[in-house]
Amino acid sequence: MKKIICVLLCLLATLYAREIVDMSGKKVEIPEHITKVFGTSPPSTYMLYTIDPSLIVGLNFNHARGNNESSNMLDQKFMALPIVGGLQGGGNSMNRETLLSLHPDVVFLWNNDASVGLAEYLFESSKIPSISVDLESVESLPKAYLFFGDILGKQPRAKILSAYATAALEKTQAIVKTVANKRSVVYYAEGADGLATECDQSFHYEAIKFAGGINPHLCSTKSGLGLEKVSLEQVILYNPDVIIAQEKEFFDKVKSDSRWNSIKAVREGKIFLVPKVPFNWIDRPPSFMRLLGVRWLTHVLYNAPDANQFTQEMKEFYKLFLNIDLTEQQINHILGRV
Image (cartoon, rainbow, N blue to C red; front, side, top):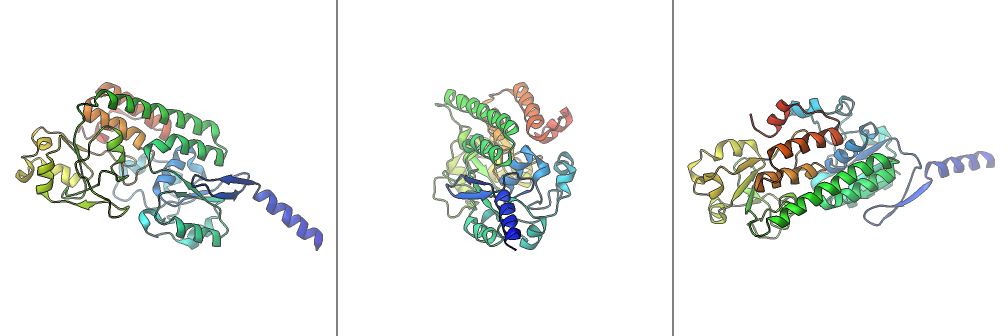
């Protein structure tokens, strides 16, 4: 019996052979070799996808729902994974039994998630190591890629993606410096009526701010969910140079809505719909796609990079991060040129 116990203890020691410090400063014991992972919210799931989609055991939601173009671009084995739910946005849609049946080696938590405390309780009681990753700011992404690479034993791939991220951010910062005295006031229009937006310090506006946009809506965020309601009269007073629209329903109707035509951005046709294929480029969720999103934002705000340069960057990004060779037709469709 003693020998059996010793063998079992040795096996357990082998399974949990590493102690790491996650990006929240917490010490976590994890297996030496990790082959199955789960992200509790889309920001971590999508980032894991760019490193190695074969490691992911479950999805947060049905990606095929209402977006066939996105689903056709993604790895079909990934698309066929069971839907587990998640803990994003302070909510809990996670099916704990489904997750346990998939036996993940570790789970990754988004460090800003309002449900981190709940997540840690759930996973500790299940004996699944939970690892917090800082993904809130676009500037955190290069470091987060290196962290993921170290945890997963995917350092070469992670270093390539981290280096790209660093270069994209540096190029964006250089452009913003050149336009320091002529930065655009950018209203971020959310919701079908365009009358929800974000406070200036909200992480939901972070990509626009990083790309040199000035948020006219100065306020304190009521919750991490954002979507602060405003009136049309407020937007008219803000008189933004540019409107970045999250919803196509608003984008399609605003130019012909006489109530909006006194606003500078509407008069000058500077209204842009956020690209969302295969994932949203700037927000909801704020994923790795922000690395391309900030380049798109400086392109539409300041024509830097110009159209040809941006198209080339877009092709390189999709190939490197998503293993997709974009056609001209796909590029035009994603950018709303057709």
